[in-house]
Image (cartoon, rainbow, N blue to C red; front, side, top):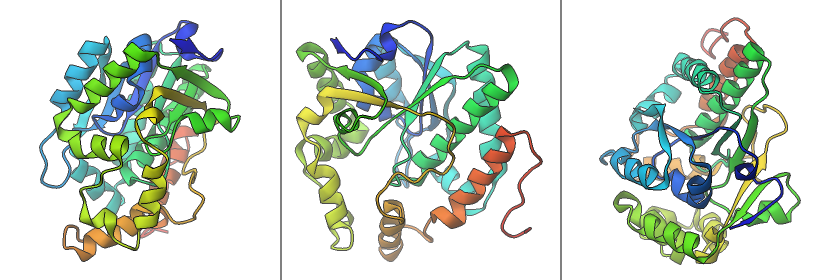
Length: 298
């Protein structure tokens, strides 16, 4: 295993992996085998009409020596969407408080989680919850957790080559082959793994002309070799609702519009309408202020 000098696995300490959905651990499987983190997962992986996939993730964690955290498949994905649409910010502030307490009690030094990429609103929301939890830990204990994120939709080595401060793990052949084997054996994510590693998309909506160029841009940078390097960006400070895309409009809004047009969903989640109230509520909790008012109350 080749390590960057800032590789978190080389300097001791307890690590927590905080991810939105079961299966995200596959993106950092090589690091996970080294760090053996406690893993916190927001949803059970059940999308619209699909079955939970916590069982598959539990097997992956056990084989890698990782441990499920106290928040592990807490909500069905649809419940998260309902909370966002209903602007039920209390669900997310309570999760931030709970996660902060778990990080304090567990004596963790570092946390790693999904990057806010504008690709999936649940991913971005959970990143905001994690950032708020890190801020709560600092406020309550004075301890500044090292806070890292990693990409699910872009080559992770591009962040290292761009000079981003962080931690890099380059997998040797055996670790790389184990990672691919584990990913290919994860039954519920077979289409996603095929798309990421081979560029084969079996989803007519993703081939729609309105978003096809964006999808090609994402998948075109991937391929098997993209998963040999795992890179974690070090976040210098808590930044809620940070927009990481070049465009002002998140991908999930355009994709949501297509799903609504296809009759699969009733409405579209909007960053400014649905995620911004959560961000403001989390800011208040992180700074120990009073509850933020919702758009309807203001």
